[in-house]
Image 1 (cartoon, rainbow, N blue to C red):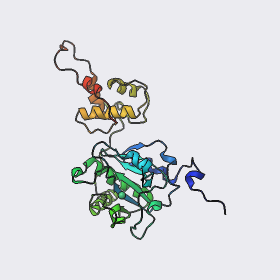
Image 2: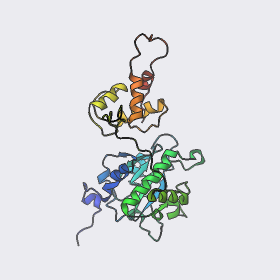
Image 3: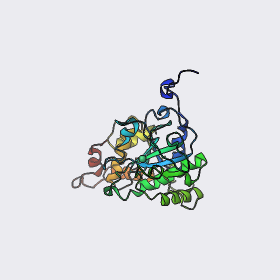
Image 4: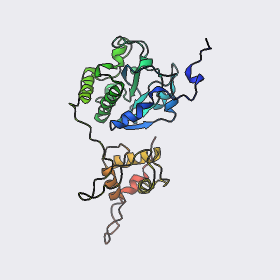
Length: 303
Ligand SMILES: [Zn+2]
């Protein structure tokens, strides 16, 4: 027998088994933000996926995913990572780890008591207190669609998804969701009786029937001249790379224009950017209300 070392020390650069998480979530039309190093993050590797455990973070009330750092690095009493996935209040899935995580602890669901090894953990941002109820509809919808997509990929049914409070009823109260209703909706998504989410089109619709589609939908990771156009409209430095700063500025812009702040530049956001960035029509005096884009671009980007 060779000396045993934990995988993370023995294979520091090993890509763990849940490397399929981002593609499966993206394929379901969900917003996905991989966290640097996610592929090689884990407390060793996972075993076969036998289910999904739903959690809430019990974290701060403000911000989209203020608990992200804790989920990545752990707490004084529990080493990280604390879940494979984080779910922000805006429905974005943060992919934190492709390996094993400390999320389940002691407990059992359908006779399976190896939660950390065999269940994928999702930590959704919510305080767990009455001040954070009801959850944002966009977050619940993403939670159910994300769970459905993961179950489908793993060849499992909705009964294989449990709340942490069901896995460990004597210790845990998360998440503050009715899990029977949650599973029923997940089952409906899997069987096709719950309508598909309205996906953001891949490009602007053609200006007239038969014409080529317009500008493509841009999101984090996009590159090129059209990204520069977005950055110019938002008063950012124009490096042509749609990174975190550009995404944050897009979210700010969308919030200021009463749009869903998803950080994705689809047809609606393109139209709003055009309107905000258009020079005033000739002959119109510039005096009066300041251009909307000035105040937007001047808004500090918060973390
Ligand atoms: Zn939990």
